[in-house]
Structures are given as C-alpha cells and as structure tokens.
Length: 120
Image (cartoon, rainbow, N blue to C red):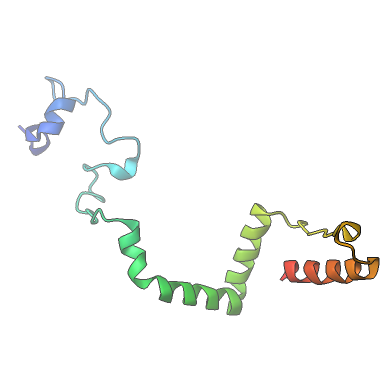
C-alpha cells in the first residue's frame, strides 16, 4: 500500500483498485496538497490587517513617494485612475449665483478656481 493510499483523505478519494474516483485538490490547483512543488508550502493563516497595520505608516509614505518620483509607478496610478474614473472626467462647476445673490463675475471666478483645484 502506497503512502498516499494510507492517508485518510486519499482513502476517501481512491477506489478499490487504487485509482482516483473523485477530483483531487479543490477549486484551485494552487490548493493541492499532493503536488511536489507545493507540498511543503504552508504559509501562516493570519489576518491581512495583522500583516499590514504595524507598518502602515511606512508603507503609505513609501507608496506616496514612489507615486511622486517614479515614472513607472506614476503611470500605473494614472492608468488605474483613468480606468476607474475615466480619462475625460472633468468637473463643470456652475454655481447658481442668482440664488446666492451674487453677480456673474463672482460665478466665473468661483468656477475657474474650483475646477482648477478639482483637477489637482
């Protein structure tokens, strides 16, 4: 009897003739416990918060610095923003100056300033 046939999980999967009668593994090949490449890979099952929170401030600062100073990272940020928001997404601010009791000159100045800050 082979080593795999002595394993209780494999006994459930193997038929009387030793052939696999059920699907081995799971929904993902990466979860297989029988592949030679993955047999000894058992990472700890911890929380993502535990992995990140202790170093969050450092990670945030480094990510911000990369986004400012590395062209490849910056282009990745821009592409992601374009894919989420849209490349041509712009603010068209038109305050109701009549309702506010202000003149049209104020409305134009307000519109220019708000749109400029939005673009930043």
